Amino acid sequence: MAKPPLIETAETIRTRAATGRVRPARRRIHWDRVGIKVVTHTLLLLLCAFAIAPLAWAISSAFKSQAEILSSLDFLPQQPTLDNFKVVISQTAFPHWFLNSLIISGSTTILAILIGSLSGYAMSRWRFRGRALFGNTLLVVQMFPGVMLAIPLYLLLSNYHLIDTLWALLVTYLTFALAFSVWMLKGYFDGIPREIEEAALIDGVSRVGILWRIILPLAGPGITTVAVYAFLMAWNEFFFAYVFIASNDKYTLMLGMYSFIEQFTTQWGDIMAAGTLTTLPVLVFFFVLQRALTRGLVAGATKG
Image (cartoon, rainbow, N blue to C red; front, side, top):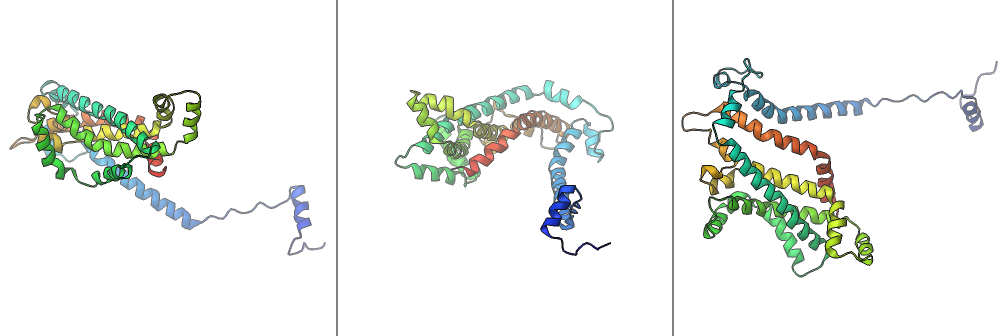
C-alpha cells in the first residue's frame, strides 16, 4: 500500500473535501489572551465591589440601631429595625426636603433641555458672529471649580434678593448644567444629516416644526444624557445649597441630612436611612435610562 505524499496537492485536498474526509483544523488556544481577560475581569469586579461597598454598607446600616452601628462591625444587622426610617419620615421635615429637591432638580432638567436644545441647534446649523467665542466660553466655564464662583454668585443673587430662596439654587444649577447641555446637544445635532431638514423644508415644514418633529426625536439619546446629568447634578449638590440657604423650610435633601450631624453627636441611623431613601429613586431612574445614556454620551462625544 502506497504511503500518502507528505505534501498534498490542491487536487487531493479538493477530493478529500468533497468526500468529507478533511481533518478539522485544531483550534489553537492563546493562553496569553485568556490570562489577560481573566486579569482584566478580576480587576473590573474588584473596582465594582469597591464602588458598591459604601452604598451596600449604608443600606445595611439603615436597618441597624444607633447602638449597633457604634458597637458592631458586622455587615448584616443582627436585629433589623425600621425605627430609623420611621423617625426620618415622621419626625423630621424629610418629605418637605424631598419635595424641594424634586422641584429644583425637575426644573433644572426641563430648562436645561429646553434652552440647551435651542442653543445647541443654533450653534450646529447657523454661522453667526461670535459663534466660536460662545462655544469656547462654554468649554472654559466647565474648567473652573464651583468654589471660585461662590462669592460672585452670592453677591449677584444678593443684589436681586434671591438669597435663601429656591430661585437662587435654580439659577446656580442651571448655570452649570447649560454649559454641558449646549455642548453635548450641539455635538449630537452635528451628526444628524442636513438633508433631512432640507427635505422637510421642501414639504413646507417650518423651522420650529423641523426641530420639534424631526430633530428632537432623532436626538433622543442626547437629550436623555442631558436630562440625567442635569437631574443628578441638582439632586446631589450640597455646597451652593449650604451657602445660599438658611431657612429649614428651604432645605434640600443634602442640607437636611447634614442637619443630622449635631455638635456633640451624629445620628448615624437617621443619616443612613435618609441616604437610602434619597439614593434609591436616583438609582432606579439611572438604570431605566442607562442604555440611552450610554448611546448619548458616545454620540455626543464623537459626532461633529
